[in-house]
Length: 240
Image (cartoon, rainbow, N blue to C red; front, side, top):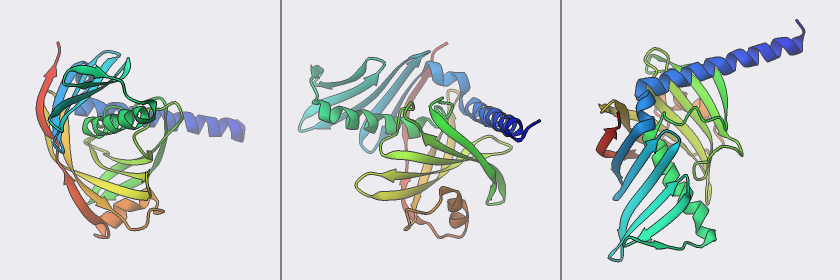
């Protein structure tokens, strides 16, 4: 076997291992329930609702502004905004930002669902240990084919090697300035067969830091706690 063939074989094996890890992680968190669930939750004074039925999906955000009731919807049909139940035309210059804002909140609330997206570039790094527990360490980047999460293009996920729970994640973002975040999950709960968590949200002063180094910085208490990210689950309905 040539060096090139051996490299291809190892690449294929790693891709299969990553796929199996992600598949098991999604299964533990809810699996097929995600694909037929309606989930409503409250986050930062906004109400969000996701509906999925096979390949069809709808992601909503509802809030009030200046006595108006606003409902934004991202679905297979694109983006729509309703103000007091009347459809409004949104300038093209705002569509991408609003679309990604909504997708970003839903993305984090529904993790690990979505990690199996084919448009993500995935790499399995060496095993990590956090608070004495063993973790798979998965690096993911968004390619052009992936539905990006607002301002974020590089992620790291720590998945427990025995329990297959997503307990830590980190990402870099580029908005007005560069930044880095590390999140530690807490308050896990299962509602109608789907697992949800809240997060302690940390940062580090040097945005150039490798995401793979953040677990050690976390254990060394070198990260700054910015906030807690609590998601109030209002309703979870899973269709038969």
